[in-house]
Length: 417
Image 1 (cartoon, rainbow, N blue to C red):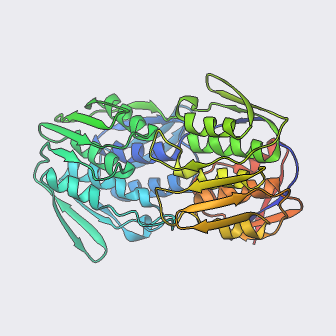
Image 2 (image 1 turned 45 degrees about the horizontal axis):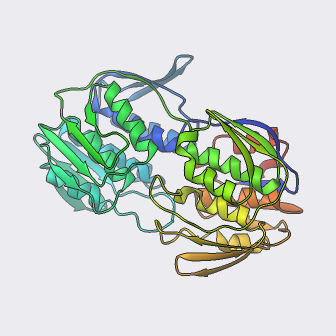
Image 3 (image 1 turned 135 degrees about the vertical axis):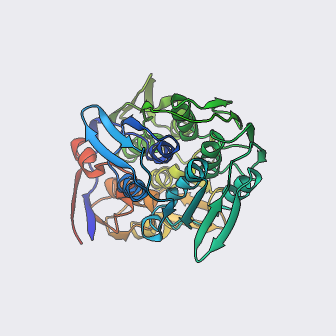
């Protein structure tokens, strides 16, 4: 098992380009199942979760080919409708094949999902919505079994704006008979990116980017070519890396329009930056001041940036109160940040962060994807050497992070634990 070692205390300097968004690429790969065709996708990140998704689709009969023209996804000859436990257990997003398989084949058998241990993320809203579209759902031996003769349009009101639930129902609705309306839909940019890919396939969708999605089902979808949006969480993470090291970093290919909440919060904390189209330039000088934040569904501050922002606040002047309103177990990185010298007290879903003058390098252990990133950031800002163990979480969502940070001047490397 690998670990990442960081000799901290070095201000970052240089340019970094943002990769394609994992959380957009995963549902788009699943959506390719809807049409028996060959699709071409550009800007697909090279991540562990993407490789898992490709293995899952190959298990269903899809074929992939990498080339100068992008990633070819051939879904013409599906041979299975089952997503087995071995492929689903490490990645919650694997449940996204449920909607496309039911829509195209009329049946699916999908293992209940795994992924990061950050709290309960049940798929009951996915299943309830599919049942409203006429799908018969049974749960047996840890699997969701779904069957339907023909999906019927429905009016679906989500109890919570679940991202993967919205995506699953949106994909299913594209081939349903009649009109489907999804109310209280997730408004995350990755949902909109999926919807635009579905439009490229011939889907009839209105309300993209809003909390009400209206879909008029079509008889069939077709081949599409599409470029996946840049990763807003990766961009936010490098913004935090520049902040915690007091560096001078230019972030290119950043989805600025989807980073408003993150950018505004860093500016409030005193970070000097300039935004120009898809470029964010962080300027050196000044110091961070503690600010409060509460994670919220988009367009609020993303829960996927909470741990990274907390790492930066650990070295800010004053006190920050960080409230996590999305996942009940998303403070698991705090005990590891304390090992580096952070002063953080937790009460329920709130963390009170009192900034310290310096952090000290130490061995730490990652518990999930974004916790991994926060520990890397803390190590960059700490004095001495930090070892981050269990970085297989990190590889699920950050493409070549140690290489990108090295190019910015960080002393960071990977080695066997």
